[in-house]
Length: 111
Length: 117
Image 1 (cartoon, rainbow over the protein chains, first blue to last red):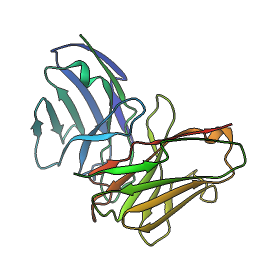
Image 2: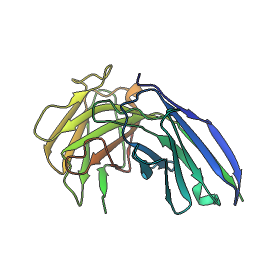
Image 3: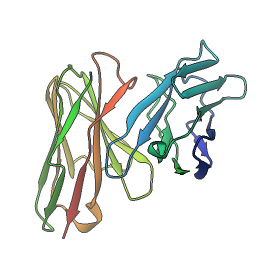
Image 4: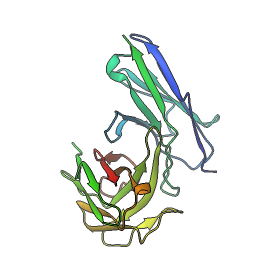
């Protein structure tokens, strides 16, 4: 019920390309779907998040797509830049559940 | 903004000693703070949830007598690793949720690297 599956484990994208990371969940009670970005040796930072009442949210080059029926949400990074190279985590949440982070996706953007 | 600080950023201690890590929300009040542990190249694992003025809630498998958490004010939570051993070496990260946001919109500290020799 609490399982969160993130894919891929690692991703290499050419500069200027689109990076796509996926997160699948089982708990239908989740009502907050964030993506966190973490650089080596640093704490994670909230990148973008979505609530279940919308299917897509865009902030600059970052977009979350949410598919409630499939219980999946994804992060799209447009025009990927070397500075986007980091590890990304999904962590769907509701106040009635415990916090579980996805396994993480190590993204490398090649110049 | 929403800034969370941690102190120290790194610490080396001898086996058997205790280490205290502070987590502060600098520009907002945090009713709820969280403590995580992260091993190299792995995800964050929630250790405990800390609510101001009450006892922390520990996740299964986390020894509450070993990892003492105190949330004495709306801006400060501390994690004390007691009788540290080399297997406690890890990256400890705290986060804080604004006001009554609980686990929503968490703001993370920069982490504390603990090495036990």
